[in-house]
Each structure stands twice: as structure tokens, then as C-alpha cells.
Length: 77
Image 1 (spheres, rainbow, N blue to C red):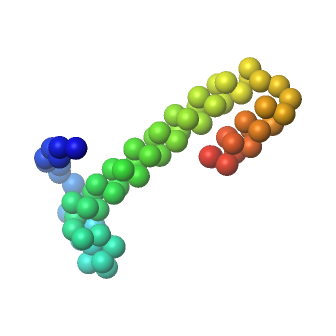
Image 2 (cartoon, rainbow, N blue to C red; image 1 turned 90 degrees about the horizontal axis):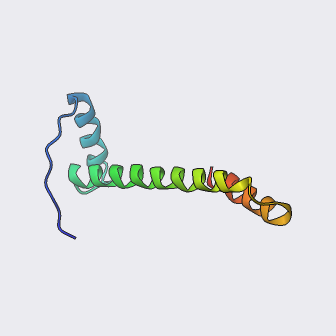
């Protein structure tokens, strides 16, 4: 995968907090912190999309399948 560079503006306080987290050794640098935050947000959005699709299809099922689907939705939520 080719990395592309983007420029963003963030509040000074937020940058300081990010640098503090990096300083704790949780990330190697601010770039890694930002990439991890973006990955987490994208994963959260994918999860919400899956839950929405499951909820929309939920009404079309009955019996044991519906019960299992309900448990899956609850576990994802």
C-alpha cells in the first residue's frame, strides 16, 4: 500500500496530549498515534455498518435464526 501525505490542523492542546501519549511509549511517534486513531475510527464505522445491516435483515427471520441473529447484534453493540 502506498502511503499518501496529508496536512491537518489541530488545536495545540490536542497535539500536546498526543505527544504525552507518545512520550509514555504507547506509540513510536505522533504519526503512528494518528494512524492508530484513524484505524480505530474506521473499524468503528465498519462495525456500525454491519450492525445496521443485521438489524435491517433481522425482521426477515424467525425462530432460532432470529434468536441467534439477535445475540450477534447484541454482542457487536
